[in-house]
Length: 398
Image (cartoon, rainbow, N blue to C red; front, side, top):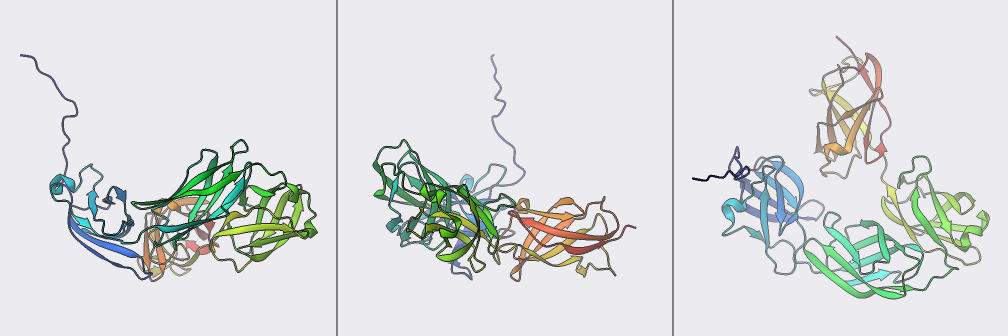
C-alpha cells in the first residue's frame, strides 16, 4: 500500500485564534475618528484589518485595542479582522458572520491640483486639495496616470491636502495625466488633472531635494540653514537679486554660487511640508518645491530608576533600567516604535526597550550598558534624525 507524506500539512498553534467581540466607534481628543475593539486571544503583535487595510494601533490593553481605522464610503460596512503573528485570524471562527463596522461616511470629492500644468524635463511640487474627507498619512496615497511623471516625495497634512514633489521626464510627450487619490479603501480620480507640455528652457526649477547642509538630511528645523540646487536661467542670477520664501514667508539668502543656494528657514515656520519659491528682482521665478520643516528636537526632562530621580546623590548603575521622560519626542498621545528611538550614553547607542505616552510627553526606557564607565556621563536621545541636547547622567559602579 503506497503512502505519502505532506511535510506542511498543518500547523500546531499554542493558543486559540483571536475573536472580535465588540467595536465602539468614537473620537479622540484631537477629533480623529477611532474604534475601540474588544476581543479574545489578542497578543501584543495582533494586527487589525479593515477590509484588508491594516489599521493604525493607537493603544493596547490586554484584549482591548484602540485603532484609527481607514476611511470607507457612505454606508459601506468594513469587515474587521484580527490577525495574530502565528498566522491565525478571527476568520477561523467568525468567517460565516465576520464583524463589520460602518466607520467613516466621508466621500472623496472636488479634487483640485496646483500647478495643473508642467513642462517636460522639470521638477516641481504639486499641491492637491481634496474635499469631503480628512486624509490621514497612514492611509492616503497618490497615483498619477503617466509613466513620464514620477512622484519623488509625498506628504499628507491630514486636512484634505497632499503635497508631492514630482519629476517630469524630458522625453515625455505632451499629454494629460489622471490624478488619483486613495484614502483607506476609498479612491477618486480626476481625469485630465495634470497637463504635461513641451520643454521650456526658460523655466527655472529646483533640482533634487532641499537638505540640511550640515547633515544632508531632508528634514530641517525652523531657523536652520537649508541648501538646494537651482536649474534654469535663475542659476545665473546674482545673489543680491534673489527672493526666497518658505510658505510665503521671506527667507534670508546666506550664499548663492553656481546655482547652489543656501538660505535660512524662517524661525516662525510651522513643522511639516513647506513650499519654497525663488524669484529674481526682474520677475523670473522657479517652480515651487516642497521641503520638510522638522519640529524642534526632543528634550530630556528627567531620568529615573524605579521612580527615583537619577542625580549625583543617586547615580545610575550599569545594567539598570533607566526611564527618560522626554518632551517633543512625538505628538502627545502618539505611539512611537521602539526601533525609531536610540539613546546615546558615553558614545554607546542603546535601543529603547519600551516607549509610553504620558501627560503630553513620552517615557523611554532603556537598559544602561554594563560597559559604561563610572563618572559624570551625558545622555541624549535621537528619533527620526532629531537629537536632543545632552543631559547629565551620573554613573556609579559597585
